[in-house]
Image (cartoon, rainbow, N blue to C red; front, side):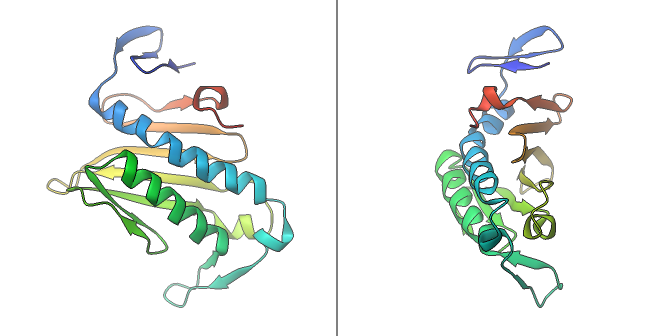
Length: 166
């Protein structure tokens, strides 16, 4: 299992200095944790998860939780990653950086609306010139696990205690 701290990433038993991209990834954790905690706290509440509206553009559904978690996460991401501008699936946007970031604050809205614990949160960072995806971070609110993929390393899973999800 991979372990990390603020100075090094230990993957497959090998120590190496944490790269710039991993610092970017770790900067997404406060937003990921905030979003995952809210989704987990409301997942089984019928008055919260069961209320949804249909989007006309693509006939998918959106809940108040989609919008609230997106706004909260976008604000945190813009603060913690000032060189990025983040845009959410539901239309929120924040930041003034040149790099682009995208957020799906509740991937799996339909399962969430019927109180199934299978939704995730997804954050990506992109280079606007090349269009290259620099990192993808996926959080699972039900378990508190976060997966990270970059071009530098294989996918790494961070356990709940490593990212302080309670």
